[in-house]
Length: 142
Image 1 (cartoon, rainbow, N blue to C red):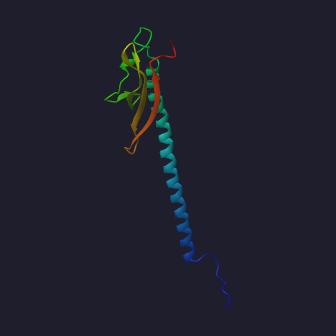
Image 2: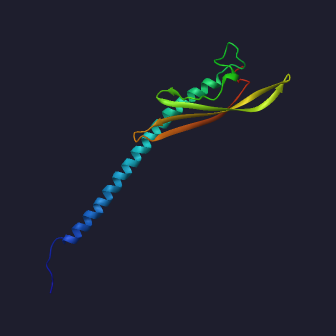
Image 3: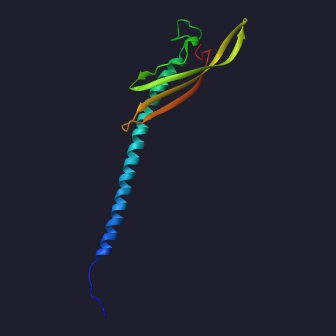
């Protein structure tokens, strides 16, 4: 017997709806992922600017506290509480490196500085960017 059925069966329609729903859910998940990553990229760039501004503040210091710089080399120390710069919590850790004996005194000639800028994203997750550098007692500007 030859069937003269036209159209789709109920099972075929249900299978096509399931496939369509899976595809749409995948696109929604992809959109959420892209949105989250783009927000992180925008915030990390702004946090990087905040951390760089503090790093440049340290780099333009005076050699040993003379009048032409911003701060003395010996005053660059670890910050216990974060400083708020453009809405980002900026903190830094300083480690003294390469002690040298000058005129009988033990003098630090190099400091390792780690600067971290933190923020909360819209899901209340703490995110951060970190910069690491070394600063010499002897300024490149003098």
